[in-house]
Image (cartoon, rainbow, N blue to C red; front, side, top):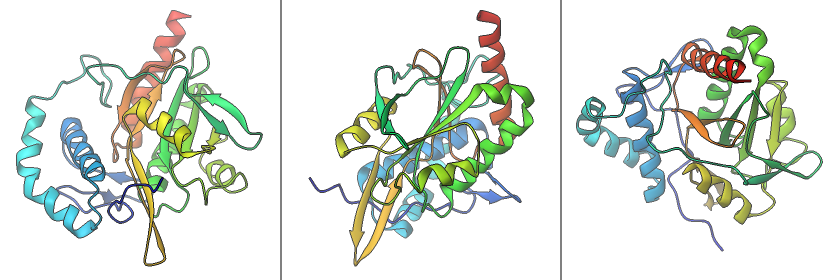
Length: 254
């Protein structure tokens, strides 16, 4: 079955809805709620199948003045977590994706007492994926020994090009604790995306491959529950804060 049309490959868009680049990672201005609202807006446009990036930017600009004030009504976390804590938890328990090399099924949940970061992306992504992965890399550096309890699972949304030789090598440049997940078929990818409320598409237009995907990273505990979500643009200090809180909580409950 043909995969649904989409806008051009997702770009890092300049500010007021924007990414301000530092030396190695993006920073999105505004409050956590505003950043999350912006991330949600982009995901909505992906689901609507808007194929033209310029059209998407203009549409976001047109409604951003309406959408961003919604942060006043958004649910804020009652803890010190700086990511987004969804009002109803998502669960990936029982959902598996093929890991490479090896070809074994990897269940999307953390080991006991640890945290698993699940991310949907692809190795040819020019901006969103590498900047997010660099932020995660920097966050792990900032939490010291706790980083040994953090795994990254990247699920490629472009399995035709992200082969067993390519994806593991790509991830190794960001962390030494990773799971390179390459869906064996479209149904396996969709099952994983549905568990997180994610979406993606890959199409060919005029001989050019276009890929679109969400920018959210999902933190999963050892039961498969999504405990916090990081919208695209969350900085490494905020990520380090969340990882420290979650890992310390799991130390106390062991």
